[in-house]
Length: 88
Image (cartoon, rainbow, N blue to C red; front, side, top):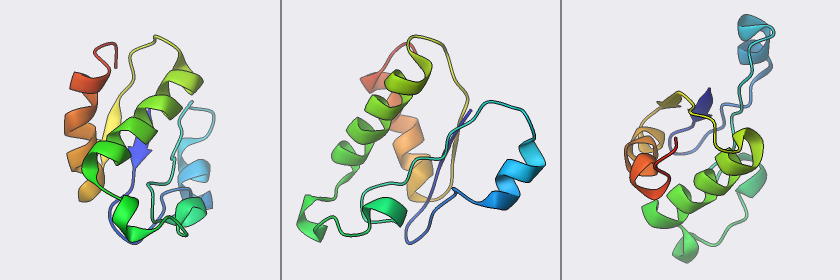
């Protein structure tokens, strides 16, 4: 399962880890948020966000299908991700 945050936030939250227990999931930050909050604004767009998440998903899950859960802008990224990565 892949959680994708919306604007101005992160979903890498200890409460999510607690509630999901042993289920395999990741919650990578989008550019501009969390660990990537220093990304210059001019370099942030939906296409770059999709590409970032695609790389993370491929690295973590290889060719396995995953469930995408996006909030706000994360939902837009989740909608575009299958066309960038048909195996998702």
